[in-house]
Length: 358
Image (tube, rainbow, N blue to C red; front, side, top):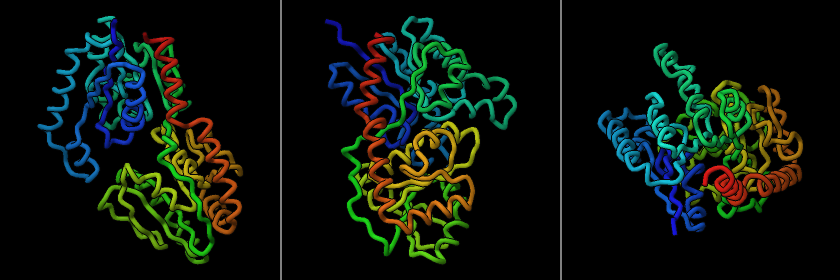
């Protein structure tokens, strides 16, 4: 009896957030279904370690990543389904995807970011002209496009993709304990990010300085080890990120925040931080950008803040009212249980697999 084989081609190894959430956390469920799974990331841990510490990449290591992906694809004919995260070869034309299509195997492609703007908005005119529509081509010629939100879905349809499904970025609730202790003597405002997104947090510096004059606050920042938290005008602490303890760390917050500028790239984000905060039963304050507007129901599980005054007013409301924090946190947890769990997503993925792929 033929055993169905899937080749997963994530962009990063497991320590890369997008690949961990879009591919790796589902692997045990795929294997439980009795499918034969192979996973081969494009970049390796050496690349990501340098990226997170803002060091220059080794050209030889990057070249090795390209050769390793090429070698893996030589065996693509052995698989029934090839599931690609974003693209097969960054900053190369879509020749590899074209070959897979012509082989008859085809491919599934998955997006949780607006990676098409890496090309159509690139500062180099040669890249814009040569590969500005690369991702649109990859989407158009796929068997199925999975996207994390409505902004990405709209782009895929405009690109001419025939089958597009929204698969939000989700959490495993077992890893996110509910917040149990609420008090008003010290309010911990929390943010989860990476070295490249610290600029978003910096946008709230004036808000924190103002609030620090009237309230006893602490800013908790979950980020890569060694990252320096800028002076925000209130007591601040860096908590080194840990996959095993992330949920537990978030549950120590009182309020979760997600500031974003209203730009093309940020509109493609999947509100994952908000989903994490809500999974722990926290109220949230977020910029009304992209999927944030879908996840945050104003006044029910959090607030949407358009400007500095909105941020200040929203945070003050939560700082002063412990019962409001509890109620909003409960509502947020309810939303996550209904819409943003690994189990729900996998059920959708399995249905797509049966309907469109095999």
